[in-house]
Length: 165
Image (cartoon, rainbow, N blue to C red):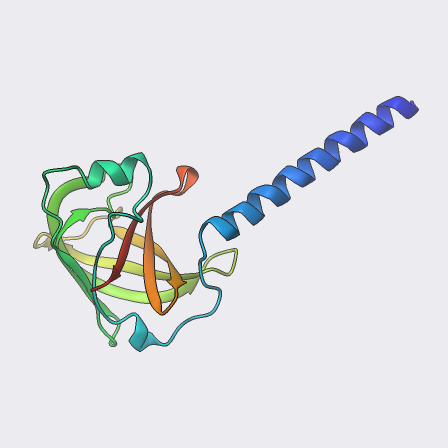
């Protein structure tokens, strides 16, 4: 009976340790903010940062030979406009074809208390947005620069990253 108890405690300790490692690794791998910066610091034009964009899905969106000179613009009144950017918000159906969109944005926090800038689409390419047209991004800061990490596939840490232009 004593041997079973020791093995059980070892298994529980291992599971807890792995959980802690995964949580800590996520916090250090992506320096997402837990407090909101001033709204003015996120308003303006954002462009794709191809060096920080990650994962297979991100690579597919940024294929060589495709123009990625579009932008995302956030305004202080809670509106956004996207012009000629890959359709990174079409979850599991992302497309590198340039798309345009508009809608509203707002601050939110996830379960880890990480700050998010979330997009709620009203129109995509001149048509009413669908149920799957939404974009969740985490905000990170490196030095005085802010970055938005738009989730393509959170399980594999695929993000399209944009920076202020």
